[in-house]
Amino acid sequence: MKKLLAIFMSFTLLLLGACSMQPPEWAKPAKKENLKDIKIGLSVSTLNNPFFVSLKDGVIKEAKSLGMEVKVVDAQNDSAKQINDVEDLIQQGVDLLLINPTDSAAISTAVQSANNINIPVITLDRSADKGKVEALVASDNIKGGEMAAEYIVDQLGEKVQVAELEGVPGASATRERGKGFHNVADTKLTVTAKQAADFDRTKGLTVMENLIQANPDIKAVFAHNDEMALGAIEAINSSGKDIMVIGFDGNDDALNAIKAGKLEATVAQQPQLIGKLAVDAGRDVVQGKKVEKMIPAPLKLVTKE
Image 1: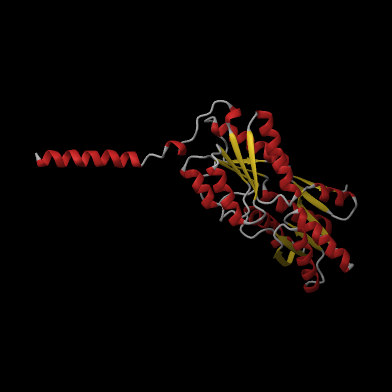
Image 2 (image 1 turned 180 degrees about the vertical axis):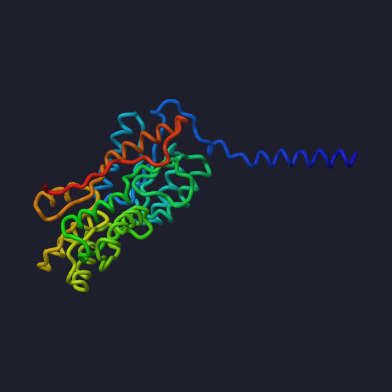
């Protein structure tokens, strides 16, 4: 009798253990056939940058055309705030997360939180280092960096002294744009100096002022985004020097600066297209369809000519 009781108790504990391993009902992904029932959470690194405003607009426009609701949060370039923002979106019961990471490493914990309760994640422009991401929608940042370096070589020749304004340390776009630039620059140019200016126009101005003072023979600058490039132009104008500046993004201010002859060139992305493609990929994921892990948005080099 005791043996039978022990077997019964063991079997009961096994069943209870198995049940406890299942996620609660609220944690299971909702199966929603109607797109109008889908709520998207969009976390943007900063809305203080025209590029990411355009990206957000692309998401909202496409989601609206499909009848999907979007909740937007602005991380203000603060990785800790972004993690909290994403956790809040998860608590609000979003069905899909679109994340434009401030920091690719830091955002990993939030991605993993979404993974734990089966909320699909799509990243935009920058990747996450860890966690399951259904797709990254971005330009080919490595190719873009190569395009910038090749343009400098074509215009100024080989071995000229150049500087590099880097983006936010830890962001995948910073790593990739820098890698592409150095793929060409390390053999055909002389990279005299490089320093992070965090994708910020004001920091771009300040950093460029310091670089000019320390490296008076710089002939060109590659900035990892247009905001830093526009800040660098202000510093260069104040110095009275003639230094070529190439940016990255293709935002309206940069395009206007090219027309005015102030900015030499920009590697232009299509942020609204990135937003649209991210929503389309998310729609496919929530409907059980397979998507490509990397969804590219085309780049083009824009100059005055």
